[in-house]
Length: 107
View 1 (cartoon, helix red, strand yellow):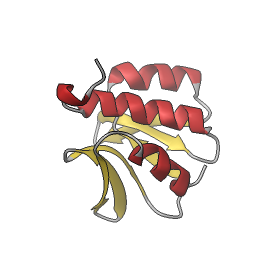
View 2: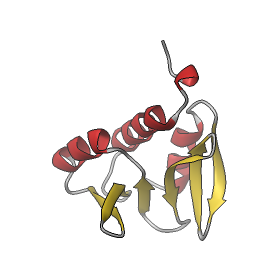
View 3: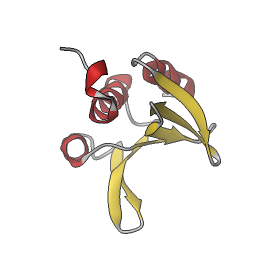
């Protein structure tokens, strides 16, 4: 996958915006970061909770690894060269659901 494909998946989610984040681009829901990436690099950092992160790590260990902030695990890093669009879409949607206001979630 390329960042352009990730962008299409992320921006399909309700109210997701793309904004600069230091040397990265970020995808956000009402200011909360869902994912970040650097143009031209094959990695996507997804700020997934443990409930989303752990199954992905178990099922897709070739394409997904823990994302650390210091000693704390704060999500997953997805190798876009090894991941398929279904995996990336699933991670983005689940993380969006975790961060989106309840008023945006489907009933």
